[in-house]
Length: 250
Image (cartoon, rainbow, N blue to C red; front, side, top):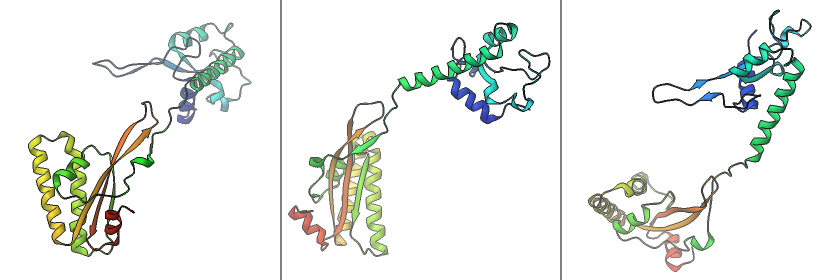
């Protein structure tokens, strides 16, 4: 038999990639010219070979490659324990293995888990209403630097209106994503292009509303930081929501 992939993965995981005796790392980092080097051995506590170290004729052959009969050592200490079997008996090897795996588990517990990243909204930063947008320059300045967006639009759009409104929202999103890297002339061109789209929407009976909201990103390895999202809405001029936005009750 041979060591299964599952047992091999568990062995390396429980051993923390370290020799159970000297606790040195068992993978040497890559160099400019060569890849990583594995300097660890998967060692048998009881050898399956008749003349092997710590061989026990009564030990079940089916358990030779079991996880309980395996431990991880550097090549120096692998050679040592196999040469000095009177000192490193099977019972001693099992104690070394058990103590090392408990040490690895304890060390991992000493390091608190990195909290997951979450985005929290701040009540006084949530827009009470979305102001009407009159120019591409105004909208572009809101969109650039935002890491997320809330999109809204009037219901009941026909096919032509769907393409018009959908393309506008998509274009604003795209311009916002690349805005930080644009040269001044490119920003002016982008604002002019958005001007044209806003004008076309107005000619079809739509108004554009937008605002920027600051949220808080928490978790991970960094301190809390600001996370900006764009509120963008395209509504028909007779949409009831337009009245609520303009009157400040949305």
